[in-house]
Image 1 (cartoon, helix red, strand yellow):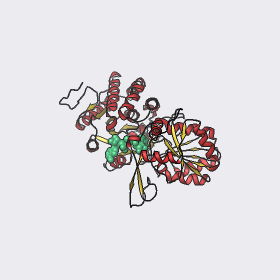
Image 2: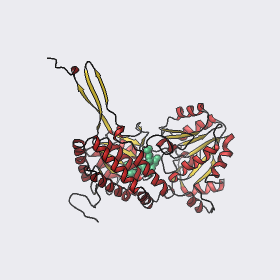
Image 3: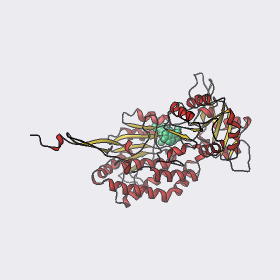
Image 4: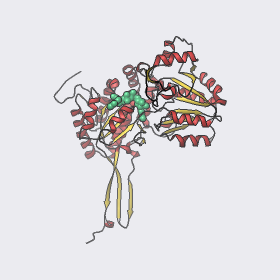
Length: 465
Ligand code: NAD
């Protein structure tokens, strides 16, 4: 039902507004009520209601997301929704610190920032909303989203459901709002609104740069291009299936997903065999060239090569229609039929290949044979392009593991398992869908959306006169 009204809310979906002005105004009013009248126990109750609602709807949301965005795979979308719902830390992750001495008592607590403006990617549409909402509301904030336009209907659906769940748990309306038709202009309006105290963006470099130019405190979670090293000491029976699982998860849409492999000569054949035995299809050079022509475009350029370039005379870009598509669909498009289920396409290539340099976000994984560990290390660090995002190594040599971790300095670093383990999926610990490399917060949690506030009892608590 669509009921345009003077307040700007254009549908019966709670929190979804036709204008930035209304989405911001209602969000700011909700945050004031939340901060003044709701305590930590209330926050915990509301976050539990959010978690329960997302778990209840995780499958429907996965289906809706794939239907609307035409990207990724339903079971993996469902898994991401559930991960965001259950593994995002809540209010109990916030710590109050106390210092006492003869001079008095000082308490430092994590206080809300206020209304936060947040931008979401198409690749993790629902889980970013859920993860950001749990983190931000846990810190006592409200959030106004400028969601990715290609996921706006699914986003509106979950925001409506979350607001209903919060209200049913006796919380205030409008703690989570969004603009119904998000554009770059609506983001500018959100960024300029005085009620919005902080900006958080999860997406590519264009978004992060735009937020950093806003003049407001901004947290930017940007692109990755995670390399994998497989060294002489690696167990390829472990590495093969895990690399296939990681690089094919949601058709490699994830920023942390494995994007290129550097394997030492002694393990290369065995690794490729192990990957083939676990759902990977090995493209020959002719097939790899056909896939490249299908899914990438090349601009001739006179300029010096950029990080995502291949050679000095061409700059490659992804063809959008192939991002997040199934491996079998890509194979069929180059005329290859297979009987078995194909999860991932792999091929051997050189360091300069565009699939090594670009964040391809599709289940096509280049493998570079290296003469030794040090050569693999140098290439892996270069291919990560200083994003400080994610990296992975299969090795039983702790010196190699340490050397790689120190040299690459990524926020997520995994040994002998997919990078997903670093986000609490198949590994210990909590999750985040906003990994802030460019602005330095790393794995964001509720404390990143708070400020330190002090209460001080002065002069040892004594009247001095
Ligand atoms: P995208 O940058 O195209 O879009 C992300 C969001 O930013 C969208 O809402 C979009 O409308 C907006 N946007 C895009 N360009 C903008 C600009 N110039 N000014 C203002 N807003 C702009 O990215 P995407 O395709 O939705 O998502 C994939 C990208 O996001 C990949 O690069 C991936 O690595 C990255 N990502 C990073 C993280 C992380 O935690 N670091 C998580 C998920 C995705």
